[in-house]
Image (cartoon, rainbow, N blue to C red):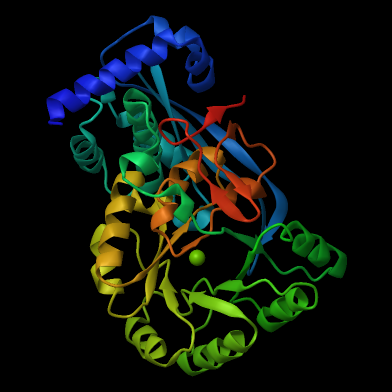
Length: 378
Ligand code: MG
C-alpha cells in the first residue's frame, strides 16, 4: 500500500471508529469528536506523580515526580502522552511547559509527518527530551487510533515475545520497610536494585534472605574504581544477578570498556546514552543499552535505537522513569524487541490516570487497543 492509500485506509479506520459506540467510549472523549479541525491541537497540564514508597537517593529522599500530561486532538480523535521529569535529568514542569508553549502544531495538517514534527521540535529548542517525548507519544497514540492498530502491530512485533518486567526494590535501613518493599516485588520474576550507595551488598543479601528471583543491578554511575567495580561484578554474579547497568560514571569510557572485557556479567549503558547517535559509540564499551522514551524523545527514535542496537549485536533493555500507564504502555509497544524490560514506573505511583498494559505473572501483556493501548481513567 502506498502512502496515500495508507492514509486513506487510516482515515477510513477513523470514520469507522467514530460511528462505533463501543470504541467511541473506550478510546476518547466523545465531546471532542464533534469538532473536526483537520489540524493538530496540542494541550497540556502539569501533574504531580505521588510515589507509593519514598525513593532513597544518596543524599535525599523523594516522594513525588514532576510530570506533564499532554493531549493532541485531531479530527475528533485524542492521542495521549506525558513527560516525566525526575529532577536529576534537568527538566522540570517549568521547562516542559515553557517548551510546549512554544510549539505550534496547528501548522501541521498531516499527523503522519512524524519526522517533520520531530525536526520542527528540535528546531524550536535543543534538549527538552522528556517534553519532546510527550508530544511524540501523544502523536503515536493518535496515529495508532487513526490506523486502528496498536504500535507493536504496526512495527510487526510479536506480542508473545514481551519480556518479564523487573520491579525496583530500594534499600531501607528499617528492616520492616525493607521487608515491605521485597513483599511488593513478590509478584514479579525479576528484581531490580539501585546500587552505588553505601549498602550495596546489604541490599542484595536482604533480598536473598527471602527471594531467589534473578536481580538486575543498576549502579547509577555509583562506582568510581574499575578494579572495585570488577570485584563487585564477580560478587553479584555469584549472587544470581543478570547484568550491571551503568557501573561507572559515563565519562569513564575507557575504564568501562576495560571492565566489559573482564566482567562475568553484561555491562549495560544508561546515563551514557540518550539518543540515536549515542548507540554506535556505546557499542565499543558496553554490551547493551537501556532505552527510555524520556531520554530518546519518544517512540520514534527509541524504535530506531532498538533496531540499530540489535544490528550491532547489542542487548536491548527498555526502561522508564516513574510514569503513569501512559508512558509505560507506550514503551511497552517496543518491548517485544527487548532482552529485558524495566517497566515498573506505573506500579510505583499511587495516582495513575490510565489503564494500559498489564503485568501478568511478571510478564508484560500488551492489549489490542489502538495507539499506545491506554484508556484514560480520570
Ligand atoms: Mg539506570
